[in-house]
Image (tube, rainbow, N blue to C red; front, side, top):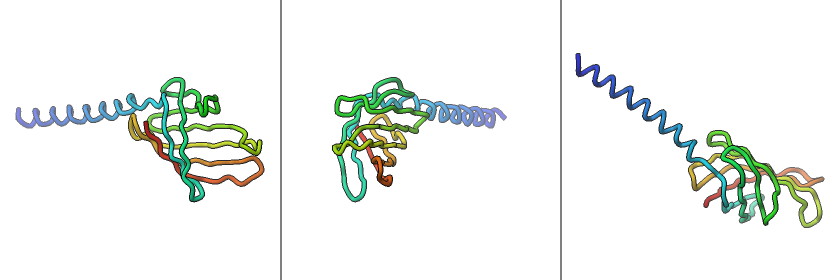
Length: 128
């Protein structure tokens, strides 16, 4: 009888430790800082550097030393949108959705929209 209780107790401890480990994963997912992005869109690869400032949950996106947008994080999901005028002075938005893999990597998709043109979708990966 004692042996079965011990096994049951160990099983409960294991389940709880797995639960708390998965909760800790989200505590480590802080995107604040500078990230190197690889964007793939329409057969092209574009490199960009974005800096996220604020809290773990929300803040601003900095690109080329300018505050160009905002971000939000929920669990391991990240969303951010940047707004700017392109070289032709057309208003442009880039809406990103993705998953934070760990403290050093994240990936997802984005939609690039230039005023007066159809949106184009792409994928992205980022690291630091």
